[in-house]
Amino acid sequence: MIHDLEKIERMVLPTDPSFRAIDREETDRHVNEVRQNARANAKDEFFLSLMRLLALPGNGHTRLIPNDAISILPFRFVTIGTSVRLLSSPSEFAEAVGGKLMSINGVPVTDIEAAAETFLAGTRQRKRVIGPILFAWPSALLRLGIFSGIGTIEYLIRADAGRISKLVPDMAIRVPGSTLYPQNEHGKTDASWSSTSFLVIRDYGKRGLLVVLPSFFDPSETKLSKAVSEAAGRVRSRPETPLLIDVRGNTGGNFLRTMPLIDAISAGAEDRWVGVLVDKFTFSAAIVFVALLKHRLGARLKLFGEEMGDGLTFYAEGGTIDLSTDGAAVRYSSAFHDWAEGRIDETTPNEIAEEIVAVGKLELDHRWIANSDDEEARDRFCCEIFDSLNS
Image (cartoon, rainbow, N blue to C red):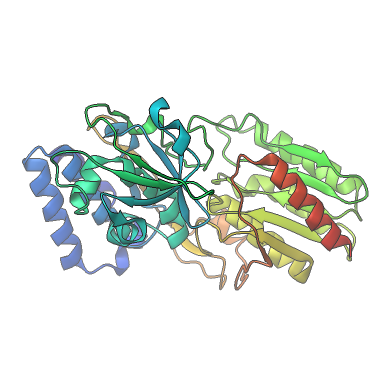
């Protein structure tokens, strides 16, 4: 753990531009706490203090990802809207699945979220994405003062119909954090879910065309480009048809590869309306994609859903450091993005600086929140959106 901390001090703190605004004394104070836990060989405490250190700049791209290195109780919690829901549990608690988490050991969830603020990096929405793993991690609940470290942990779950369930799990049964909480949290019920394609198109006839873009991250460097080309072709073939672009759950990747689709959408009829579905699981390059469409289309673009996982000003790029402590990883940043005011600095890569524009704000035109697994609800809502865009 000392070796891991030294790696972070050498590779992250001096080079990550998001730390420039943090007072050196404050950084050193948190580094010393991390070092004390490392010397004590207290692994979970080491991770939690490291989470606090990396959360100091408030930049969600810079953070500890402990999922592979920690053991948790076998519950999957996900924030849907502003409510924390139980989406997976051992079979004996199956009747509580889908319910809203009300409290842990009698402490209301809102109080726990407030206590966890300093351990989580980024915006309020990003914290809602990455925070629920803390509710299943006994060491985190201990650090937050929710669990004494002795005895059991009691979860109070309320079903939509009002039924209250008390869940008291066997504290000896733990699972690796990554089995229930993926590094790139997507909000699906099945934590192991991953997109099987980069494009889904659904034709609603004269009503409109739905284009679903689940991810912009493509290690093969060919599949995304092919998907974008296909989508661009379909969009160009229907220059007057209203469009609905779904980037919910799209955690980003390379927005530069999506430019042909942005060009195709922008080349449509001047009176064509375009809707975009977003949620708190929309991040990074997917946010940039929306920002560029807003810049091009102006009032003809309408946003539906909930606030995205980041704002328009953030630090990104950088890389990932794998720590030696059983699989934990540190994400760090290297480049400044400002799509609100169109600013760049010396850290902004040239190819990104050439595309940056001032968008101002991305405000929702219609708030809509649904379980990301509910495709039937999405279809109903898509029809409503197309009807509104055609009116």
